[in-house]
View 1: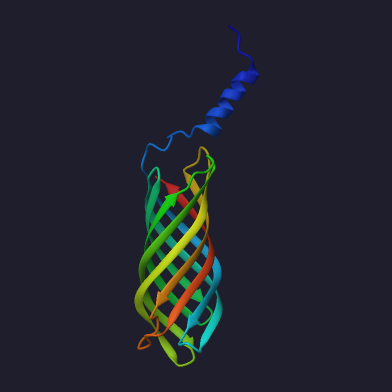
View 2 (view 1 turned 180 degrees about the vertical axis):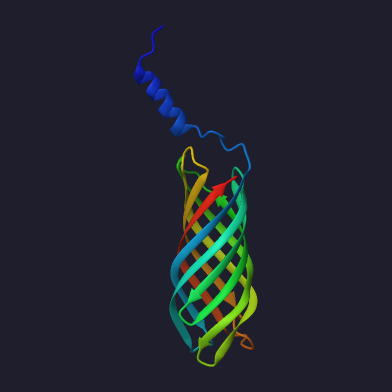
Length: 182
């Protein structure tokens, strides 16, 4: 039986595109970095609120399972009149998608580790709980140990200023993550 180059090329293309090398059967451990840009709104009370542009930078470690992903994440937020660090634990559910692009949805909970603020007479950003929601897509780079996540994220931190029970901060940003798979 004689095989021609078209059938070999078609079989190779099908193997690369349709069947990933590990077929989702392995646990992937990873480490990575993230950067984002967006905005932040700070509510000091019912009548007083300020909005700023913001940048975020971070590092993460996690485990990628066939249907879910879990990660620990450190973020540094740099806002016009505010800087703070945040530690979060995140969980993601992978939605059905293509081999190269996989959408996901996620939630996270963690803590803001305090910070400095120059907003009027509010000088101290308090250590408090923070919650976040994420929606994004993972771009799988075939034959390389990297994955790229592109996501939108909303973070909410209640009672964020010291001695202000009615203060709240919302952080909205678009992020890109580069994850190295071990």
